[in-house]
Length: 117
Image 1 (tube, rainbow, N blue to C red):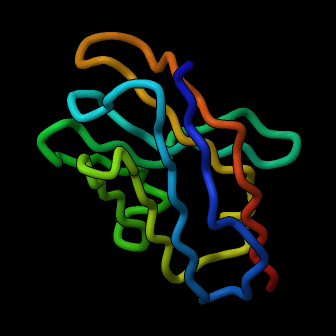
Image 2: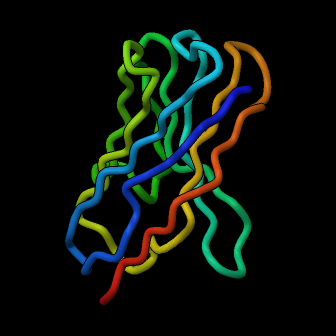
């Protein structure tokens, strides 16, 4: 059974940092596109960042320069380093995986990030 399990969320003050982890199991994700999405209360889920199998990254404008997505294929794990956090970054953060061509088919359960002002 394929599983993505996020961890590392929590409560932090504005300007602080958090590092989210997404551990994958059930298959290897080394050739998958991996991404982070987030959903704030009352809002639709939005894209945050993605990384492909070779390490090429892409970010939403709202997090560019503050967030960094990385992956460790040996550990089947993806990370999201979040710096200079703002209250508007408060959301449930989800990890997702997609085959090289196709939709995101695997999703984690989410981890809550709360940034206080």
